[in-house]
Length: 145
Image (cartoon, rainbow, N blue to C red; front, side, top):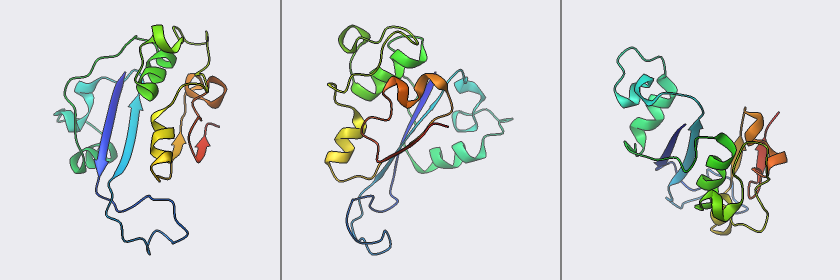
């Protein structure tokens, strides 16, 4: 599993009554992208010359690329639970795909962003990262159709 975390200077995502164009804050935006079963060495932003990944490459060009990362477990649901909570499976209780739900008692990075005034949105395409497993926790909007 490959995870890209991008910090982009895109203006504020702060929750206010003002429209995004009226907001003057220059706070960074956070885009967290995970690609399940995708090899890092097949993306242009990691140097693959024949890559056909222009959107990811453009985002990575504006943000921070991490060249070394380690999964807590090689399964999607527990690994995403660890990424969202910062906890190992032994602490958050999700050990395999389909064996447990991300507990509402745990604090996620989306909840921390929300507490700090960020607007949050999530969109997933894999069943094992849908809201029935608790992954919508802390998002203002969450798309998992």
